[in-house]
Length: 168
Image (tube, rainbow, N blue to C red; front, side, top):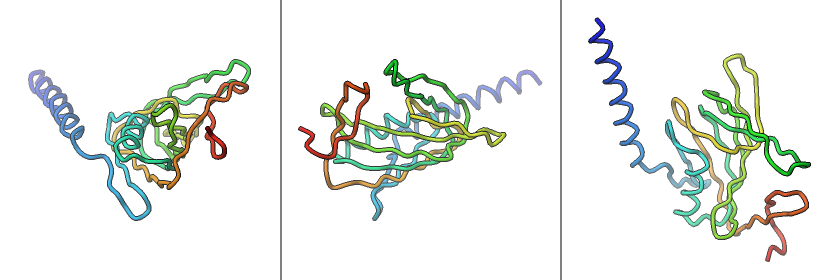
C-alpha cells in the first residue's frame, strides 16, 4: 500500500513537471478582431507574460481585462512613505483584473489592479505587484491602441503616471 502511494505521488510530480515544461513552449495568445486573447496556464507569471507579449508584438499601448485562478500580491500605495504595502493572497479566484500597457525607458510598463475572492466570497483587491496563475488558467483580453504611450515618474507623488499629452 505504501509503495503504491509513493508511486502515485512520484507519477503526479513527474506528470505535473512534464506538463508544465510542455505548456511553456505553447504560444500564450492569438490575434482576434478586437485585439488579442491571451490564455495563461498554471505557474505563469502574469506581469512577465504581459511584458513579453508587448515586446514581441511591439504593442504601442493597450488596455486589458482578465479573470481566472491566481496567487496574487496586491499593494496599497502609502503616499506619505511613497511605497506599496504588499499583501499576498494564495489560491484565489480572480474576479476582475484591469490594466494598461505603456512604455517607460524603452521597456513595457504594466499597470494593473484586480479583485480576488476566496471560498467564503470575501473580496480583496488593489494594485497588482505580482501574480501567478493557479490551478486552471487565466484569460486576458487585450485591446491595442494605435498610439504609443509612455509612463513618466512623477516625483511629487513618487509614482509612475501614464502620460497622454506633451510627454517628451
